Image (cartoon, rainbow, N blue to C red; front, side, top):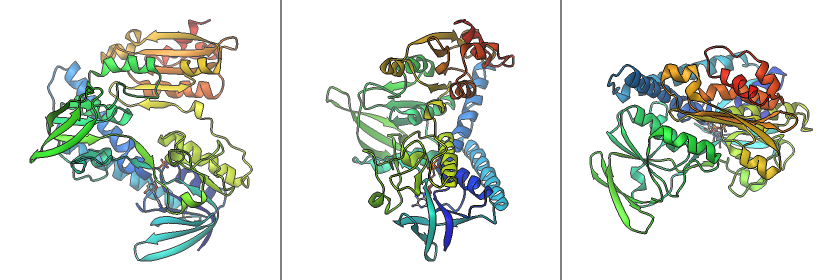
Length: 455
Ligand code: ADP
């Protein structure tokens, strides 16, 4: 079988670029063992976790504001989650019909033979596909460290996976890890009425995020976090009861009893077999690419989590589109991804978001900036929801007053950051932001209020 472009992996790094190429007349073969578009984001990641999150936030708001004591049946939430996933799978099947002349989706696992040849293991055999260009978008998967009893622990895939058998949860849950998936899930389950604790190996959570943002967010989450407590062992002591052994930091072995252990100990890239032999990798095993998404081989592109540049669905989509344009220009790049303008949100309850250059980085880079901030307690939305904690911070380059970065902790952070991302991407200044009439009452109004503080 011959085609113009082979796309390996049908997630955010894969199908948007395939659609773009198909629209311009390219023949594209997409390969994915799921046989559906959406990748891990739709199967077990962003969409299902955010479905559960939104319901958890509703419950949390309901219980606080209406002074009720709702503890929903988790299986009802899981049923709703599966329905949302099903709707999106159907939507993707409809989209594929539109491209039936140019895109073929093959259910199977791809193996790289060389930079133009892929072998696909399908249900009843193996087929060979040849393409002029390749986009590798095989994503990432949770790291599951091995220790005695680690087989008793689940990962986020078990909690959020499409049609997961996990429909009921015990009252007491232990989450191992201190990254954004650990914290998001901990606040989601806490909001749903479960007793949750975090076991964190080091003395820090949310490593890599700006410390002022983290220090503003953490007190609002009210989580039980056990720092310097690496997990050592899990023993099953009953039907849904486990004893978790950990080191208390002074080297003493301690234990606690819990009903479920979830490991949120990071994610690692998934490479198709054969990729490591012909493609340059970074020290963590990601496929190395430049900002045009090109690998060391001029006709091979790698997009999404597999390149380790920004492990978020919306970033993968942007990378996928860039790869498509650069294939259309015969690998002479005409599109580069500006990673600095891609917003990031930690979907805890409440959430936190940032975009652009953070102050610690600006200082390292020698960029002189002016900072302006606004407390969310003065924001009507924060007052309406009675979620008054949080801060918005804007950073403007001194002189030009161009917005170089921003972060927000608190209500609607994930919405507000999109507008700020546009501002960073297009070089808007404090004056531009100050003059824009954001709708009232929305938390976005704070952007103009805050920008006016530096004029
Ligand atoms: P991203 O958002 O980075 O594009 P995702 O993790 O959402 O990535 O999706 C990656 C997809 O790649 C998954 O659906 C997975 O099944 C698929 N995949 C992984 N390995 C292979 C392979 N060897 N062949 C084909 N598809 C693969």
